[in-house]
Length: 132
Image (cartoon, rainbow, N blue to C red; front, side, top):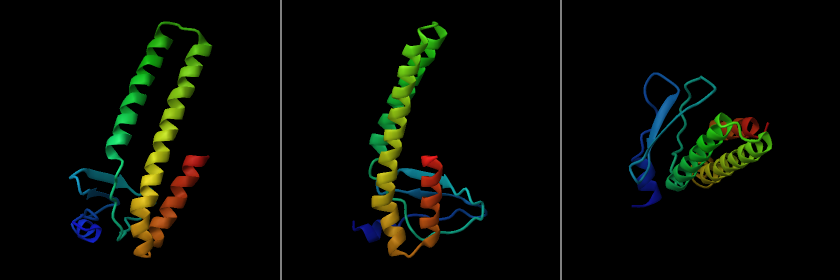
């Protein structure tokens, strides 16, 4: 199946709101809400290639964070806890980088092709929030 055929099969906007879902070629459903609250429609698709890698990284980060919580409950040394929290934060930031790269390489390429200025504005907004 070509990229165009995959994109044409994807749903875009659910009625009555700014939350919508997309189905990827592997059958995964992606739901997101636009923070602008204007219920805008965008013609580009969200075709993710790194879903499994992101999910695995998030699972590891959650496990790591649970371990840090146990460290706090067991009154471990504060410096040890802070070092482990830094590692969790780094893991989450690296996961976000994978999501951002995947979004740019897949979703935004289609948005640019479709001349979807709102998608570019949304990307700028999320980068601004992420980088603060």
